[in-house]
Image (cartoon, helix red, strand yellow):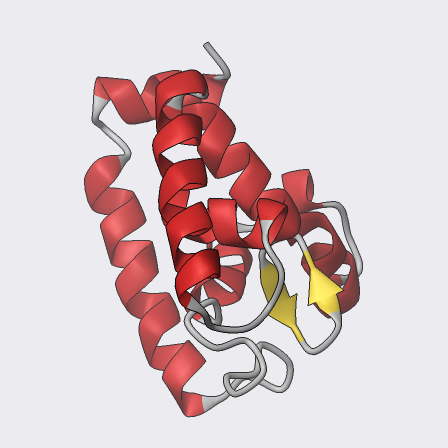
Amino acid sequence: MSQQTAKNVFLWQGRSWVRKGLETYFTFMIEKIWGKKRILEVYLNVAETGKGIFGMEKASQTYFGKPAKDLSQSQAAAIAAALPNPKKYSVKPMSPYVSARTKKIVQQMNFLRPDRDIQAIISGQ
C-alpha cells in the first residue's frame, strides 16, 4: 500500500526507470515519516475507486448516496473489492468478481475485528 500511495500522491502516470526510482524513494520516505494509519488514510483518499472516482468518500457518495462513515461493512467491502482494477470491476452494478471478493473481505474483517491493534485503528486511538 505504501508503494501505491507514493505512486498516486507524488508521481505521474506512465512507466520509466526514472519514475520507478522515484517511486522507490518516496515509498521509503513515507514509510519512515508517516505511520501505517496515515499511509492508509492518504491511500483511501486518493485511490481510484471507479471510472473518474477518487477516494472512499467520493465512492461512497457515488455508489451508495451517503458519507463513507455511514457505510455498512458490506458496502465498504464492495468498494475495496474493486480496488485491484476499478475501471474493470464495477461496484454498481456489482460485477461477479466484486460480489465474490466482497464476501471474502467481509469474512476477513470479521476475523480481524477482535484484534486489539485493529480495534485501536477503528476507535481512532
